[in-house]
Length: 486
Image (cartoon, rainbow, N blue to C red; front, side):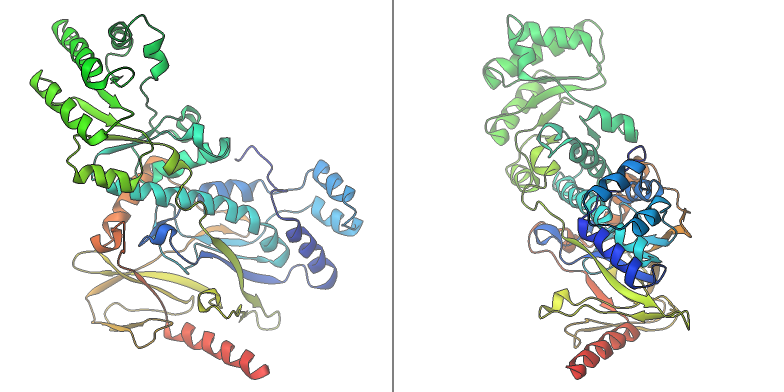
């Protein structure tokens, strides 16, 4: 993404608002915007944050080419004074974000932008586009990986993704969330992640017979010999022919590092158990049995419950498209405007008849609170940046909507970690993104901080995101003031 100028990847109203700020307000007025989401996909108990590195690349390359300005001029919407301003446009603000691979929850800022209003407004659309997509796919992939219970999950949805970018960055997000590899060769090159694959039915069909096809493939790729056995008759010919090839390899002294079969159709539970028995009887007890065919976390869970003898899962369409929930729903809302006289931020709030859509005002940060003994998440606490906490003192948490729900934490029984980290300061990137595989390791650690009840695929326990007393009071004072003014 660093080689692409995506400056015009924005909604038109961002630019028309920018011209309005330029003409009618102080273009350098400093504001705070929060990017957050309101509910987890498919009513899950958590989500996974992803896409920050691409946001960084977008911000670093943010500028208007002459061709961009010529195009905007051609619309007839923009004056020459504003277009001249755009010619020298660069991002000069601060950005704070939750690192990729982190377990996240609704209503907490994933990204906080502190910048002149013109700059903060422009980046809204692209920022949401990037983070919404990758966080959605990472969340779906994390659920699939969880359902696989330690078995390897391969991502191979490229041909079913909604375009090249969705395939490339969906593969990236899937790897962050715990997949062991991808079939997407370009993603492998771009992000230095493992690539893997077997062969198609067309390979088998192109040879005179199935056995010849298997023998040829095994000769070419003895250390990655996964044979697709369901082209003609899975148990009648496919598995027996695979076993014959494995025996020939063994007799010729070839010790394959990775060998086995792939099932891509039929009753996967029944076929895998029968195939496993046949492989075991032939002495190939360590053979991989891989399965594909429109898998997702629900079907994998069902197959596990049926005792399927599958230990490797190839997941494509349902994961790369997040088929049961095609959008993440992240939003970007104004939270504060700096008072030029005092240098302090004046909090702003968006009202709604829907309580879930009322925003949290002010300059905020987030602390994650853990059980000191088992390192599991107790809750997340959104607070004002100037607030200080001491884990050697007691802490009272309460639900910001159902305020009678309270949790009292005794001194020394909990730990706290601030989630938002500096990414840009004064327009310069101050954050070094880990590699995708390092993010994958980090995401695995993050998943271990969730209670099992929160990882349930259905009706999970909800992790509470609470407001500090100071933030809660600020929010209610603003709500009361608007009510009074009416």
